[in-house]
Length: 597
Ligand SMILES: Cc1cc2nc3c(=O)[nH]c(=O)nc-3n(C[C@H](O)[C@H](O)[C@H](O)COP(=O)(O)OP(=O)(O)OC[C@H]3O[C@@H](n4cnc5c(N)ncnc54)[C@H](O)[C@@H]3O)c2cc1C
Image (cartoon, rainbow, N blue to C red; front, top):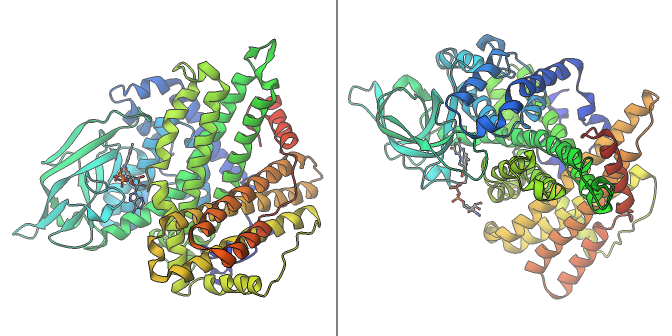
């Protein structure tokens, strides 16, 4: 597709998306499925049998597993052929990440190495730097880490105090400082380290090797979860970094850090799906074996509710991740078709979808936390036992809401990026918001009429968009420049956007899937419609609650009444028998004894 025909990041709020233009995971082709199979075979053979040894941090084991993944080509899936990789596209890479995401601590090491570890050099390195490091990173001969966070600089990453000063002979930067919470820190050979040159206001980036004098790796951190993942502090004491190891230009480090994080966020959105599917399977496996009151616990309605909801949340997150991944993928390919370099196209393509990347990170990490929490509950006392896999899943899931930008930072980013793009005129947000508000003031009523199944759902999603536009439009107008200080309202708006994107993505997927099934003479859409019904119904309630919280925070009197009434109309959806819908979904899960949707 031509670049100007492609949807832009954030435009989902303003345009009605079409199912036929939306990618759904059921469309993955044979080659992509083969890569998935290779990932899963590797995990079955090398990782799953060793999860306890990994969590005990058995000496050398994690590094050895990363090397083995490299030997199979799994570290170079998205690396271009000239750097000894397999040159697979963004979408394929996302699907591979989903599979690898099921592997607890190993998945963290893998994601760090292939993502924030390798990508800064691949995307921002000059040819000499790429040739020197990337083939060895793709083969697993070298392992990578990304060193941004410092004891005093977490969410405010640009406030770091690690300093680089040019040596008198101009051949080296002398680097001093401390980095904290560094994944793969205990064994990574190559580190992308962010530091400020002299008194610069912004960071620069450097490639540093662990064997260099002055690089001191601290002991492993003791953590709540992902216990097998190496996490250390790293100290830099007068480290001599050759000038040719600066990555990008002076002062470009913060931009590099942020751009790499956009990709990290959407990748995290994919990895948590792998983890959620596996945890759901483990829940149903237990529920199908455990008997109480003379019957399997999977017979109980309360347990079926949990199992059904695990599927609903996983399915919705998955629909959203693949929809966005294909949009990013197409944008990258369109840039490359114009002659843009692979690295630059990947950076620009993912940055274009910064809003979606941030919201997918929040959506997926919170869905996974729901899934693993209910997995523990379904397993009862055994869920609390370290002999049961769901105990590990529960502990390991929690980090996803903290790293790659906390979920608060990502929620703020969603709104901030949307507003900035609107102000630059890149998206027509304010005009659309005004249209919605003008209609309210004219007293136009919003009638909810039952039409066809998909028309109803499309109308519901469009109404959700109007709800967000109304609140965004009125509150930004009310607070003007001080809007940036209204974090609670931004959180509310972000929550609305996240639910809306997931609901729309689920709708587009189910609608397209039905078309695909019709064309191939298959039936069996009922379960998918149940998932869509439950998600839309719950999304409406969540959007209404977040919207009410926002409105009640800034409006009073007649205006408050007008906005609340409009919100109630915008979030009105057809009633759903959620009990029966979740029962049907759970019954399929119980019958298959695995996540198979
Ligand atoms: C296991 C693990 C692995 C990690 N791996 C890496 C790695 O490989 N490389 C790396 O560089 N870093 C890594 N990190 C660091 C991680 O990215 C940071 O922990 C994260 O960005 C949050 O920073 P912080 O811990 O300093 O929390 P803080 O920034 O101190 O945040 C504390 C709380 O305040 C909130 N908050 C902060 N600022 C704002 C604001 N402006 N508005 C509203 N709320 C705010 C946060 O959301 C959070 O709830 C890792 C962390 C962990 C725990």
